[in-house]
Image 1: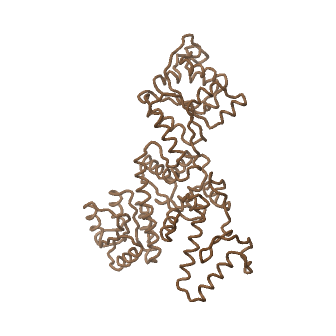
Image 2: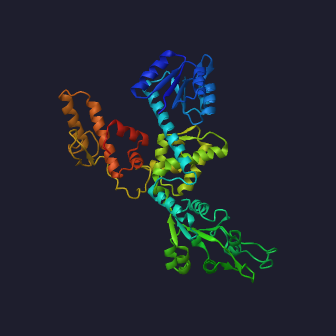
Image 3: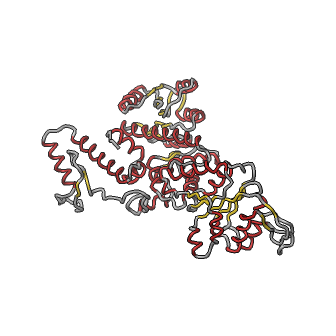
Length: 503
């Protein structure tokens, strides 16, 4: 990791921050003026985080911020300023500062803020590497890796593919990827949503029509099958196709020819069909709403796209990618999500799936007041589940164990196995069978025996118990464990390292 750069003309400020950050095992490099910082950058050096005073001889922190952001747009910059200097604070945020630190500041607050900026910088570095590695589609979850492998295996095939999944999971993206990596990649990719076109017009859209075939048909029109000749035709929401048109589609898939509406000459076409639906086609076949022979014709290879709630580990990567995409489209600097905001997003169920997350990131790019998005900046629908009581998501994560009461078990100070406790309310007359009473007894024993560092020892035991239990409940999934505990993912990772937990 690169060092933290501190720039301030006050030597005492530099000294205090150097010592405090060194205690946190963070490398520090100090500068007395903005000119020294720019000289170092001109030589090829760059920090992980820059902490700068706002008023210094030879240049201001705001001017330095503008210079640094021009060279390193993603670098977190913390501006130190007087508490009453509102204009400076506003200018700092408008210039893209990560945060501002009012003087005089509490050293622990400063260190906490700098560490948060470091975590954000490291996460942004990782996100950029991942985005560069997979520009088309993103996903590290095992279900998405299965999809990527299937696309690779199908890259030299023209076989018909049926893509299933909830709305917003990215079915058209997969269809485009299948086309782009197929022998037909030089041909056209034509997409049509069969649910979005009225039944009376859908036949003409698919197969075209001859002049005079119906009222308003003043010229011959080529349909989507002709437009896609030599390429791929993507039929989205195939489950909503009218029954009588299903027969015509089956004929095209069977012998590769069709008639335009009002036409008498068969037209040959060479088209690969990829279909998609959010519906259960087997159930629609049983109910007589979908032809069984067409179903089997389409269902040669099936790809299932998982909903976003089944791939929560991908949410941070996707959110960062969408924020960068929105910023590029709008010509602004990309917003960053704070640790608490990212934890809230990772715990939300996203009924609209990836499409909803992308729209949310676009909304945040426009509406979030600061460069770093805090949890309170998130829209109401994301925060509502938490406000309703009981966590960020009312729907349990598939594959996760049932939630447990946080007061149901605890390790004692000697590290024995957990024991079940009563559910008595936490009042002044605490039941002696509750874990609070156990904690009180253990604390008294240690204090009366003259043991040193009782606070630190018991806090470490308590935190270690919470973390290991949460990871056991979530089967080792750290993001989900952090959501259940109500802490940030980076905080959880840091605590595991500090406590030397074997997880």
